[in-house]
Every structure is written in C-alpha cells, then in structure tokens.
Image (cartoon, rainbow, N blue to C red; front, side, top):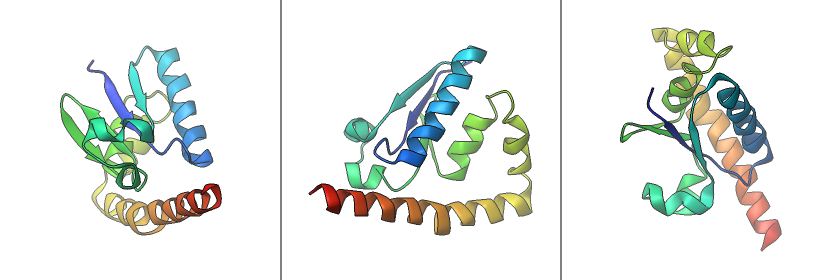
Length: 120
C-alpha cells in the first residue's frame, strides 16, 4: 500500500488533535503516513496561508483536498472506513463536501487568522 502524505494546519489545535489521532491509528494498523505542517507548505507548492485553508493528502503523486482528502485517509484507517464509504454516496458526498468547503474549512481558517493576528 502506497504511503500517504498529509498536509494540515499544525497551528490549529483542533486540526492537530485530529491528525495526531489519525497518526496513532495509522501506526497501530501499519499504515505509513508522512505528516507535514505549514512549514512544509512550499514543498507542496503552496504558501503557508494557502496551506492553512484546507486539509490535503497526496498518494502516488496525486493530490487531494478537502473531503476527498479525508475520504482517502479514512478509507485506509480501521474504524473510519465506514465514514469514507458513507461520504462517498452521491447525495452525502455533495452535502459533506459543501459543509467542509463552505462551513468547516472557512471557520477553521478564520480561527487560524485570529491566532496569527494575536501572535503578531
């Protein structure tokens, strides 16, 4: 099975906890993950700000973003495969994708920007 490479906003406490949980489960199940934070954004061809806006996964040179990135990861993790399957159903995929792109990702990015302003 090909290694997955994950790019996430490691300055986000919510994102970091979630990715750490995925990493622990991946290690237990023998899945190899390479986890990158915002400092690795340039290696993904992105600046830090763009990288902070969405979750990304790369497999076999193919990059996936948002819900599709989550689904790729979930499909390989025991206990999460059901969610990958469920969010692959056409109507649920459409709803979940829009919920991530228009609600979750912008809200998390807004929190990121607030943390950036406070730290500046």
